[in-house]
Image (cartoon, rainbow, N blue to C red; front, side, top):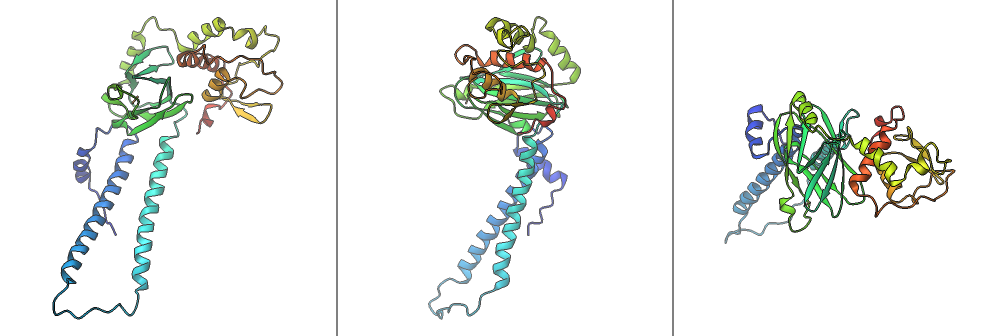
Length: 329
Ligand code: CUA
């Protein structure tokens, strides 16, 4: 029906209405978008045109004989106007679903960065300890995975040039990934109304050449990595008294726990960021088999940033083999 064949020139012209296209997924998103727009334009034109023609052709004339109801129905037409839209709609669905799944499946080798949203700013934490506010520096040509949470209300992390957007929720980790393809500066928005200064909760994403990015990472000389900050915190808060080597096994040991499946009193759980966060803030929710529910909650004691540091430390204690390859939603 719609023989929408886009030449590269037409595509270039049409995409001028869209923001910069600067990630590995933005081209795919745009193509689907253009497909949907052209299907819409095609049918709007077809239907409007037919309405116009019929209005004129079948208008009431003074000498007109009253038309009788048609004596037969056209099976062919009925099938056509059911099957053709069905094919178009199903094609859009599977096409969109495959892009959606890709957008929600970060590659295993992605660089990981943590994001905390709060009224009204974005705080970003690199594993090396570099912190940023309302700015995110990333290398070009490398997958970057963001693990995000909020300190207060729902925000939404949106980089139009990468065609990625993800809600950032209090009490939960959500993820987003992208791979930038062009060095430059791009807009970063909060795309969920979050209070008075929502519209000012903006920033920039700076995409740099890999070497330049390494220099940038090094420029923060005195940064303490998240894992090291987490280790200090682990001692300061007293986690080691139950989870350390001399704890008399009051709590489970944490070495190599990240990425593993653990046996709970009822059921099992996979140890990821969300599990660790829950176990720190609401330890009674999931009790590891063979242990007593004696751990106090740290909900009022620790900030989201400190929880991220503790998670980084626990991750640094070792990886279960092949753990990250199971990192699927
Ligand atoms: Cu944060 Cu809107």
